[in-house]
Image 1 (cartoon, rainbow over the protein chains, first blue to last red):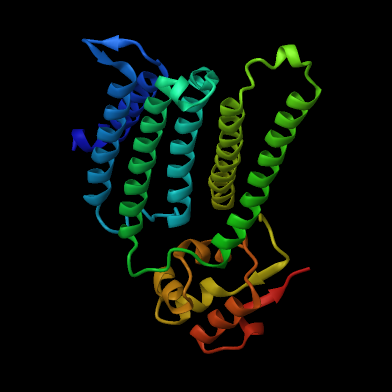
Image 2 (tube, chains in turn red, green):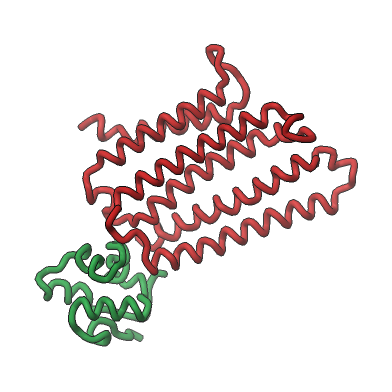
Length: 209
Length: 70
């Protein structure tokens, strides 16, 4: 009973520690890369969360919270982690290409691990509502409104990047290699998705109050 | 989505139909239970199709379930 009560905060604490280790960069702890330890801890936390979800009795998860809202909150947390991690390590992509930025592969691998953990958790969550209606017209309405926010954020990011590149003097754009610009465009996409997920979760939450 | 000019009698009709649960009505109408909760609380205005589905689930006309409040 005590274990069940502290399971949620414990998982959040573990996930927070894992995120901090991921963002810590390329330091070493006990001879191991902190970033790799962080991503391993994050995947481990995701698996424990998965177990917790799979052992939760039927009906507890959907008490007032729609399946779409669960997915939106999970998406927001993972997208937030991925975006923070990407921003925290953006300097790694300053090389002329991926071969000139050896740490870039580690960043991409850690992002892939995040994506896999997210996909697995989403699938397990979805399986909790198998056989039931998971989305309807209200969900689609919320998704459409959130997509508008996501599009808006993407437009703002792309315009900011275009203005920075177009109006800055050439000597101030030494950092803007084609590899870096490519990665900034990926970051713009990630920001758009993050805003879309966050808007979806907030719209559900506001609708419930 | 807070407050719509359309009021409804879903809660009353559920109780008149053998205390039908929100989940049972949701399944009958092919929507989530949270949509039924939002409808009953007057926080969501359904599409015409959903309004017909709900009315059909109770065996009454649309105007017996939904009313224009303004």
